Image (cartoon, rainbow, N blue to C red; front, side):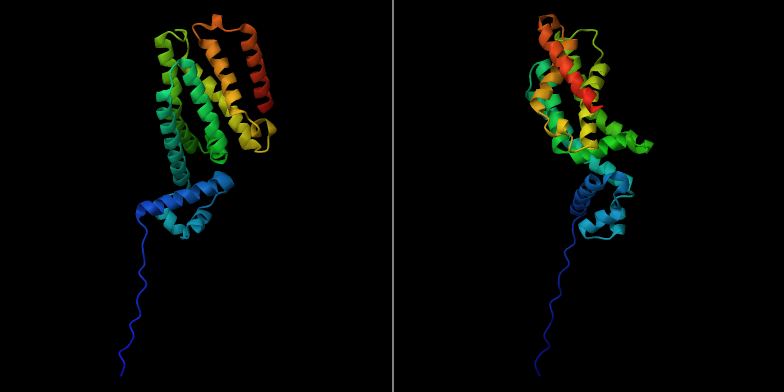
Length: 236
């Protein structure tokens, strides 16, 4: 009598915790970008990973925790990028330009996620908006440092308000982001010339706080400021 044939058991390969978390976060970012925070569901995130909804909750306690982790990853990436990149830039004006250009570039390449972040920073979920502000604080700290260094080197006026410079710079950039979030087909932002816009914003800010602004061509500066104000008004 022939010996019974043994059927080989299929070996189940379990993902490591790190790999599972990575897959969930990647899927979560896709869903948040496509649906926004309010309309996104953990069920859809789980479906994209190929797991049940309960498994997601075994790694992340809530949808809020999940979106915050996605934002943390993004902020960590862009903060390192700007902190490392600024090291190779000399001169206060050139450093302002780098920050502005880099930020506009990030906004353009990550339009959907930036829209989610901006929306939640202005949203009714107070706790979530507070967390977004905390994430934003370290990222914007680079402008504080540039301004302080510029004052110390004598390139900027000693009476310059560091906080006002930071708020003016990122407030201006936020208007561009808000327009892109509200209407991705907007012609003003769809055809945004990052280099030209960065130059204009740099001249607007640096020209107003420079210790040597008497050497700048008045007509050129006034013309660029006027043009930038017109653009901002169209975005408001």
